[in-house]
Image (cartoon, rainbow, N blue to C red; front, side, top):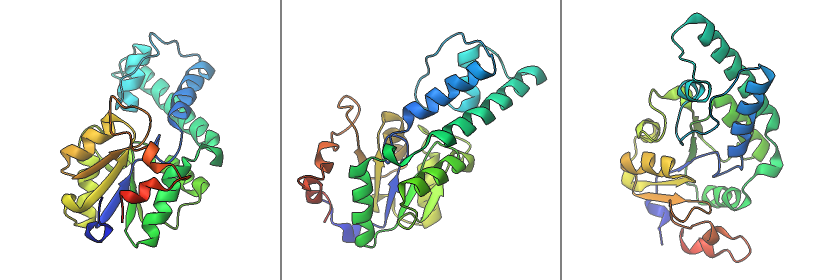
Length: 217
């Protein structure tokens, strides 16, 4: 059990943690390639790969000349637009949203730390109707090294000037969990159904029995 009186800050990942949007990003990227008639050499990417590197891997094109760079920029813009259009309230992970509200009632400051673009985070937060509970958004534009590098969480912790030993992080992937853990965060919880990658807290967040209350009081 974690005593919330000892917690200074709660940091949430976005995709797969607050909202089921992981497939949305991939589907938007694939649709953008199709609409722009950009051929692919593979459709497989490792987690945590940024857009530039992902474009190079998927297309086999190096962004070292004006033509390829222009194609990338066009693809990135279209992918972002398609992603924004696809976000809707039905994607909300209700267990997580309920927990956000629970922490708010206990006056614990909360923020989002994500590898997504800020406009995507803003659209998701508004769509999920949790703007009033979230103090700040940290996006991929705020860092040089995105997750799994610890920089995203280090930046958030530095901004609030808190001890990482008094921070709780919620993530859905090993990429994010490693980022938070390597930033010195003591309490890192995995939400989802990936038992090989993280703690199965997903079941503890079942709203039917409120058993997740046993974790945070």
